[in-house]
Each structure stands twice: as structure tokens, then as C-alpha cells.
Length: 327
Image (tube, rainbow, N blue to C red):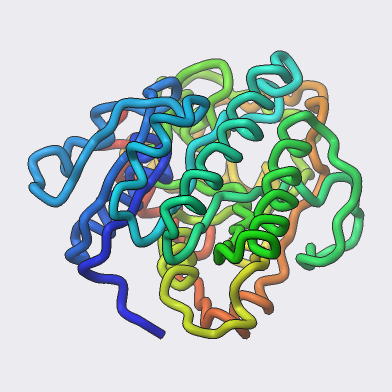
């Protein structure tokens, strides 16, 4: 397994939550990092620690523009493709734009990477691909029918990657992210992720609304586990470990009720009044998967994945970051 240092890495969507954490990490490891972002959902302040680094380049461009993708690929060794329009509800409200970014944009980046002869193309896949499959834990080769336009787009990404690896011999690895959380995750906007949204509401003593009875469960994945998986996907030299997909998760599940209780407990260390904030239960959300739990056996066996942070461990760190940066 090679050490990932002194390479040139393109990170699409590098100003986003996951992308900016990847930018910081791989710069610190001595790599050159190119960030391609159109700032539709990413933020310049996420890149504050990177902008003055001479090994960092920012290209403001759109993956829907093939010329932007080609420009960003100059002398690139690895691609970490994070750019996408996330959110199941957003895709239900606007399936056309979601498809345009997540499918056409993905194909542009993949084609540009193929033409540039990069060493490997690693991309953000999604646990939403499991769709209506009811079996737990989720195993990579058993999926159901998608439950949202977003899920369709992420599955199409996997199909394109498989075809390109077979037809054009580019090495690809898809990482099916499971409910990633941590520092820099945006609490604002109509489609904010649940953890930073709940944290912000709790800090403001605002009642929070859980969709459904709160017994839906998720395999919440701390950002540093995701960084580890991206690095392992780049570093592996095993031929049987590439041109496939991996669950990227902790391998445990917690209900939304559990999550809220943890958040209240950890935030109460900063402000005891948070323990008394009211919780409201609303209707279930369209397109949501009831339960999500990943098998991470494949990633452990083929990549040597060993996730360090459980939900509780990650939340304790994340809550401290949120308190300092969002209060």
C-alpha cells in the first residue's frame, strides 16, 4: 500500500463539507491539491486554511462544463470526485437539476479523468443506492430499487464508473457514504443535514422536529472515517480492490431519538438549558429509507479499513466544533 504524499489530487466540490476536509488533510500530507467548485453549495470560508498554501489551487468552475473539467485535470494523479447536489428532498423538488449535476456532471469529470490518464478515479457514491432493500446490514452487491431521483443519480454514477473501468481501463472506486457528519457541515438552508441543523436549533433553544416517531435508524459516519476511506482507496495496490464500490460507514446504527438524546447531553455541558428544549414529531419524509446499517467487511478485508470514530465519539468532537464556530 503506497503512501499518499507528493501527488497531485483533484478534489471536485472541494469547498463543500466533505471536500474541504479532504483538501486540508491531503495538503497536510504534502500533496498538491486542486479544488474545483462552483460554490453552489460549497463555501469559500471552508477553504480558509488552504488558500495561502502554495500547493493549493482553486478553480472556480462547474462540472457541467466539460472545458472546466479538462482544465482542472492538468497533471493530476488522483481524482476525488465529491461534487454533487445532495439531498433527497431537493431531488424530489427539482429532479432535472439534480440529474444535470449528478449524472451529466459526473460523466464530464469521469471522461476528463479518462482522457488525462489519471492513476485512479475515486467518487462519492451513496447509501441511498440501497433503495427499498430491507435486508440489514447493507452488503455492497445486494441493492433494491431507488426511492428518489437523487438515489437514481448516484446509482447511475456507479454504472458509468463500471463501464468506464471495463471499456477505457481507468481505475475507479466508489465510496457509498452513510450519513456523514462533522466539522464544516452547513447548518443553513432548506436542505441542511440533520445533525448541524439540530445542533443549531438546540443552541438557540428552538424546538426541533423529528420526521416520524424517531425510531428510523442510521449508520452515522464521522468525517475522519470518510477521510480514511478516501486515502485507503487511493493507496491500495491490490488489483482485486479496485473497480468496485465500498460502504463507507462505522458499521453500527442509532435511531434519531438516540441522536437527539446524545446531542442534548453533549451540548448541555456548554449550556444546561439545552436539556429542556422540546422535541416535536412530524410526518415521515418522502423518499426516506427507514433503516440504514452498513456491512463494512468488504472495506476491512480489501482496503484495511478500521473506522476510529463511533457516533458518540464523533459527536463529542463535532459538538465542540459547532459550539465554537456556529454559536
